[in-house]
Amino acid sequence: MQKQEISKVKEQSSSLQAHITSEFAKMHEFLTRKEQCLLGDLSREEERILNAMEEALSVIQQELDCAEQEISDLEARMNQEDIITFLEHCIQEISYLAVC
Image (cartoon, rainbow, N blue to C red; front, side):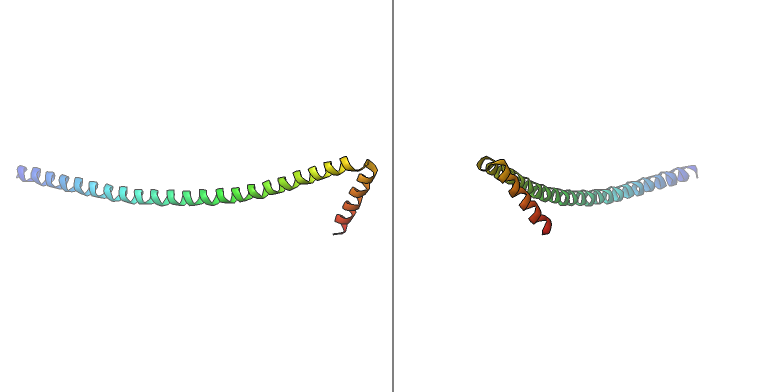
């Protein structure tokens, strides 16, 4: 009788070990799929953010280029005109921009 009980316990233990191993394999597979999904989401979000930042940087660079060109134009005009004429032109341009 005792031998049958020992055999039964060993069989149950073996069955339980197989079940535990199987469940952990399923969990591992699930977690691996979840990890891949999350990494894919992260990669897409990173790309989206970087694209937006690059576009913003491009706009800023264009605005900087325009500002530098305007400064260069003003410096050239300052060198060509006397200061009174230059200031009069500046006032006219400011007045024109205020009306627009």
